[in-house]
Length: 177
Image 1 (cartoon, rainbow, N blue to C red):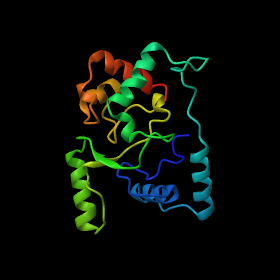
Image 2: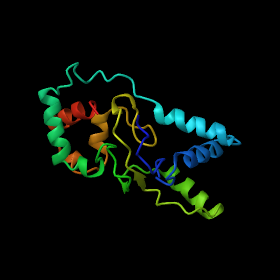
Image 3: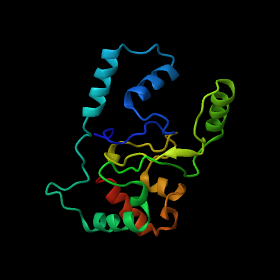
């Protein structure tokens, strides 16, 4: 349920088709690819996956007062400008201050040695927030264990300026998505 309508794919946002991203991933990992039918089957399977039940949503679907406050913070802090619409992404890439030396080395090697045309390694594709409750750890490096920690360290909207209470409410809301 996370992939539908969320192109472009991968952290750099370089693939606009899921099948092309699958092929790129397989090649990057040293694989030799899939047949056309296998690729279609894998893509269909990935697109139909549903996230596990969300333990952060009440049986009646109503948000708690803290989650409602978090929904307000989500809008007021600017989160909804990038994590927009039903897919909760705008498909654009931004520098959120998380690129690493390794990211830059890989970029240099791929561009210089292999002649690939890649986006700036500091810019990462805006991921969908659908099913966020089961996707930790966070970021392209898996280096952030919790959403609360993510909001303290990443340059997104005004997230780093939130009070502890606002940040906690925002996390409560994000876990409902």
